Image 1 (cartoon, rainbow, N blue to C red):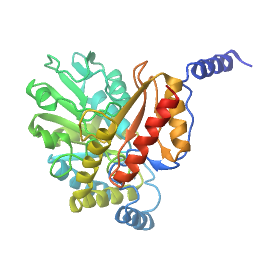
Image 2 (image 1 turned 135 degrees about the vertical axis):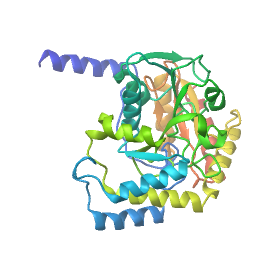
Image 3 (image 1 turned 45 degrees about the horizontal axis):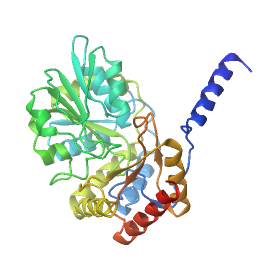
Image 4 (image 1 turned 30 degrees about the vertical axis):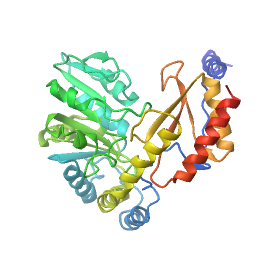
Length: 357
């Protein structure tokens, strides 16, 4: 065994001993863990349009968009998404991770200062690291005294709480907002918390994942014309990535059509989120992300495994995804659930937690 292999295997043992080793596990049971908040991943309209587009456009794009990977369907869905967000233009990336890397590593230069919420997603953290800017981490959910760039999630992915967008907008900083878990759910159009809080004119760009409430994949950066054009010219994650399969664009267009035609989905989702939080004795909120803190890593894993055995697909979240000592179940509410299912889940969760107290 080489020294390199020994080193890696020793790290794996350390993870096992700390209760931090992960396991790949396919979906099984009632979905209370995915980000398919509106249930669009299997919506007939979305599936049918994607299937038809595969037959027409093929399975792959065959190159980056600056080469042969460009398609009219990408421009069409970008135009549609920009209108959805109320911005001049939007640019599609193959993932939200790439979109955040692109925004932060392209616009933030040497001599700039980027203020980042301490609970921001890893893609934001890595994007700032890739830039040449100075990074300042500010306490979660607060408003920094900032005159440079400020980057935040609008709905935080692990704690399910909301950023103080109005207050952040009032600082006058160049505000970059990740709407990954809010787009499709909040606002009259469903475009996100930027719309709902009325701060559109104060946001430089937003990053909007299409693989969560929209049920497909990839992400859009939405903002002014000049900013999007600059990303096309300079953003390495865009320039050097093979374009997504063209059929994905058709599926996203279908998802946007469903969101416009069926606003009751988001209303139902938010009502169910409030209902489950009440059943669990948690503070009132209509965020579909509910963190159920269990503290110790192994306890979180054990509770999740028991719930899975009872037919509820809930996953344990542990460090480094969340701070040490805050291992949890990250419960996701979906529009296609029922109060009866949530009642059964809440009762089962109470029993299981008591068994592992």
